[in-house]
Every structure is written in structure tokens, then in C-alpha cells.
Image 1 (cartoon, rainbow, N blue to C red):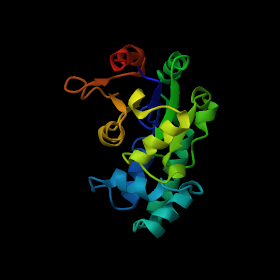
Image 2 (tube, one colour):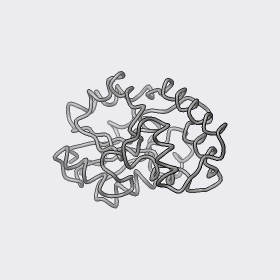
Image 3 (spheres, rainbow, N blue to C red):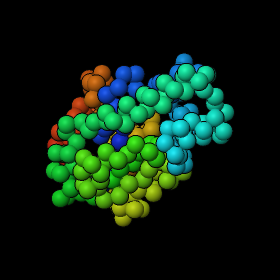
Image 4 (cartoon, helix red, strand yellow):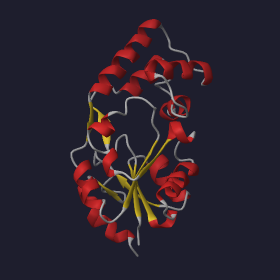
Amino acid sequence: MLDAVLFDLWGTLARSVQTPGPMQVLAQALGIADDRDWKRRLERGMMLAPAAGIAGALRQLELHAGLRVVDEAARQRVLARWGEAEADVQLFDDVLPALAALRPRYRLGLCSNTQSFGLEFLARTGVWGQLDAAALSFEVGAVKPHPVMFATLCARLGVAPDRTLMVGDDPVADIGGARAAGLQALRIDRDGAGLATEEAIGSLAELRDRIAGFRS
């Protein structure tokens, strides 16, 4: 039986509607956009400690991650795009109904690699009110797939890892990381590209029915 369901944030519960997204613009400004591991490098550089907004996160990247903004114009593009993105963050339409449906039966948690700023929408949209606990990388000091992220949240929820389901969109950080930490895991593939070839759901509206398969 399951006692808890954990959710990733970006790409699972929420998204920025800006194209290219703020992380992509940041990677371009730092000259690492062609690096296959650029997302992980940014997570490790700006999501392991609190920062004073995107300007503070840029300072962290430059001081501690060995990265440099290519020029002042690129810096201004990052600041502008991040401001636009924070104003345009959207929850996916299936999020609040899914949380409300699951909450009477399960403990719910948020397990996210995320920066410390631009998260006010979680309170404004009512997401925080549906959650029992969270483990956010900037306050835990680790990023998924590190097992301490999952262990921390299970401890905060008071649940055993093997009775906990992680739902996320990243096959390495969310799915592989959760399983390595002893949790069960289910991938959400909102683009549908992998639904025919892997065990995944396309929407959180499918989650209640799929949870039945994790109860034995």
C-alpha cells in the first residue's frame, strides 16, 4: 500500500510559458548551451543554496561554479527573461484537481531541484495548501537524483520510502533517483513522446487510476 505521493515541480506541476525558457537563456548567456549536461551544471551552481533573485544566482554561478556570463548584453537578457518568466509561471490544468483528489488518502509532498526565488506562485495558486511537506534543493543542499532529497522528504512526511510514490518528468533525477532511494516512481510525459515505449502517464488526471497498480 502507498502512504504518500511526491511530486516534482518544474515540468510536472508548473512551467514557464516563455520560449526559450529562462534556464535556456541562462545557459546561452554562460556559453554552455551546447553542453549536454548544461541543466545539471546550472542546478548544481544555483540550486544548492538560497540566492537573492536571479542577479544573486548569477553571482553564485560566477563565484562558485566556474562559469562566466559571456557579456553584459547576455546578462541583461537573463535578467529580463527571468523577470518575464516569473510573471508568467503557470500550473498545468490538471494539478489542483489531482492534488485535491489525492489529499484525503495520501500524504503529499514536493521534491524539487529549484532556485529559492520566484516561487510565490505556489502560495498564490493554492498548491502549498495541498501539500504536507517539501524538500527543495536550495534548502536541503543537494539536488536530485541524490538520495538525501527523497530521504529528507520521506522523513518530513513520516512515511517509509517503499510506501511512497515519486511522480516526475525527468527519467534520471526523478525516476532513477527515486528508485535508487527505495521509492516507487512513475514518470509523467506531458509531450507524449515516450508514452508508447515506456511506463508513463500523460496527465495527472490519470494518476488516481494508475496508483492502484502500486498498492500491492
